[in-house]
Length: 389
Image 1 (cartoon, rainbow, N blue to C red):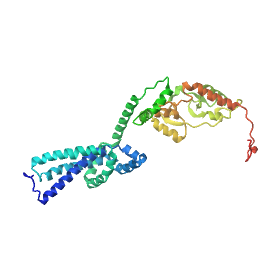
Image 2 (cartoon, one colour):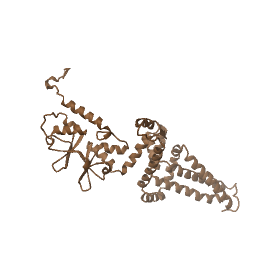
Image 3 (cartoon, rainbow, N blue to C red):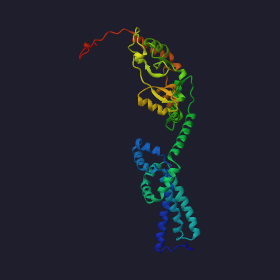
Image 4 (cartoon, rainbow, N blue to C red):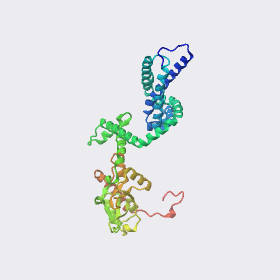
């Protein structure tokens, strides 16, 4: 530290002034990028790199590799900032007296090295500025990699990304709830009118229906199959000894398109779809045991409905039985049941009482059409150029 002002004609003074200017710029860039880059959302940047505008794709593809390793970027920027701020008083003290160095350091670091860069780099053009700053940060990361990497790895172990992502999901859910609560309140006496309003009212470009679906998807992570299944006591099921004609009558009366089939021990062995009865006539004496029945999917009662949905898709089935942890049959669930809870909206089918009349009418028409006598079709009559088959 000098007690007097440095000689401006001394070459070392010029060098010290240049170093001070560089350190102030480095401190400002480090502070600005600490706020600017670390506040960028990784998922948002990834989406922009794939589906954004041409400029957004260009900016995001350069910035994403930096912010994808959050802790390493944070440690590098903080070491960069700390090094510049600690070195500044040393070289500034060689130019001016100690008390002047303290005043200048506080003013320069606070205004030029902290406030202004942070405001600029975190402003409306945040991603654009991050794009231009990325080459500098890549260089600093290479220089400070050895001291930064062990610290970043320790932070990864201490604060795993899964925890931060769960917190992020809770924040998103809270924002969605806030948006949904601000939207219109559904009048159950005028549902169609409300749906038309919800589809046109938006907040931040997100409609009320979209908010409800996103919120339902987030909530569905904590819903298991046992919560949405139809309990065994309420399941409509038939025995293999039932005749197909009787089964057709039962399905006709109850309005179900799928019926669970059980053996003599009242244990499920499959299910039958109404399409299996397409060619059954009124004088058919066969029983259910005489035809092929569909195989169901087996799900555990504690399985998440998102996983259940994947099982339905993978097994190419709409129908499943549910077993408890002891392997005992406790109920049934369908693909429609899982989708209703995943998207948070009811999918009306033949099991819904409000639409029972309509469903019964459809099934009755279907079975009535299957009873109509049909003209026999000759295989020999089917050939190229024949207009009547």
